[in-house]
Structure formats: structure tokens, C-alpha cells
Length: 98
Image (cartoon, rainbow, N blue to C red; front, side, top):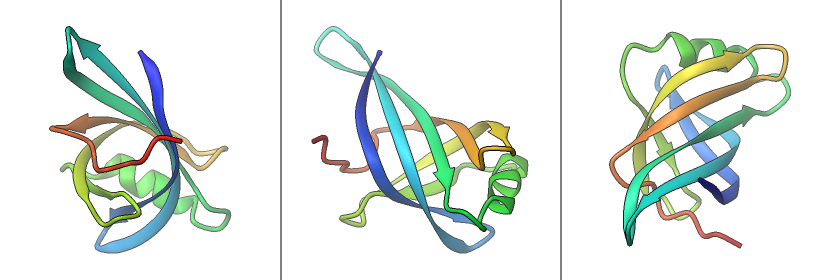
């Protein structure tokens, strides 16, 4: 597992687009993607969305800066940091690794 991307993204929670900073890790098998996961940190003042994202009963949209989308399942929440952990579904958005 290695960090593939760290930077800005947009998560949709309860129909609202929320700016987050994500760290995305990818897991490979052979020469292809196996899975991806990471964390999303909410901006100060948006921490209540972390709890709402954790309580969602469906995959949530996650957008890269170029507008490409994927879905994530939130697997944990750290309310004190305003951060959630997630597992990706399908291929990740078109994040551009630096």
C-alpha cells in the first residue's frame, strides 16, 4: 500500500458539496489496481459533515478537481479531527499525483 494522492477533493454529503482534503492510498495486485482507500479531512466549521458522512447508508460521491467522480463508503469517523476514513468503489477519480 502506498499514498497515491494527497490534496483537494469534493465530497457530497446530504446533497451538499463539501471541500475536503483527501489522502488516497492504493493497493495493487500484479500490474493493476486491486483497491483504494483513504481519509478525508473536512475544513474547519464543516466537521459536522464528517458525522453525517459516517451515518450515510449509501456510497457517497467523491470528485477530483477535474470533476471526475467515484463513490466511497465511509468506514470510520474521528470527530475531534473532522476526518473520515473510506473505502473506494471501482476506480478512483482522476487524481493527479504530484
